[in-house]
Image (tube, rainbow, N blue to C red; front, side, top):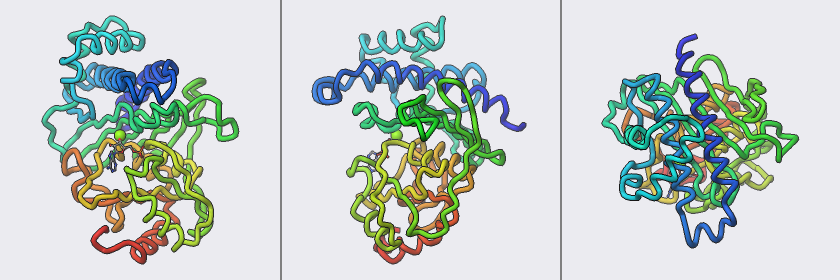
Length: 329
Ligand code: AMP
Ligand code: MG
């Protein structure tokens, strides 16, 4: 299989990063004290997760450029933080020196030709969910000449078995042309996933961000009304929203930024978009244009995100056109 080695390395790397993040999240006392007094647990987990993934990519694909969210200066400026991150990283990869770890984290801000091959990492997507002890995702994807060929979402709190909501978490992944899969983070049990078969918008369940600052809940509600959707939105942090659409836990993911000047970050969408598309769904911006991952760190040419099961995509776009000012699409 093409990209087989990349697939195996990336899957293992995201699992290690997920174990590291779970370890930190379980030790959080209450989200309230942490948000008010000390944001460092999330910083430690973010940097640790980025370090683990970068180290694994560096070991196997040393020539590949990486675009990752976190900046190494955070580590360089704080010795205490840096030692805590190193300690955590060595729980997943033994024998790594502090210097090697810092070098690996720094790889995330290289100069990249976005029209060629590169990896993109969001070490903890959904930071707010992580602090609430709720949903978050470790996102990794490989983009080759504008095509997302591999996408991984480690979701330690998103149940592998929907009938067992407090059971083991999941890793969702997709390989271009091969489909989308979910694996238990606990047992490694795996199955293929497909988006649902709903053909009428009114029967759809839609998901959106928990954080109302990240997307316009009011405009999403107008679109839902135009589609005659009566069920309340499924609010969930991080790219777990894409996982929900890919597995049929929801049929639509809407994300219209509050500000028309906001451009989405590539690492917030590449992995999720690949998983939805390989599960039979469709992903576009609010005007129906495909997402363009060749522009840089942001989706410069796209406003808003619509991910659906595919079958109702045009209905959703029609509802958007009827409800949202043309300046927003
Ligand atoms: P979510 O968990 O879906 O609310 O999305 C989390 C992501 O929202 C983070 O990774 C940020 O990159 C992104 N984000 C931060 N500020 C904004 C904003 N003003 N509008 C849209 N997305 C944002
Ligand atoms: Mg993010």
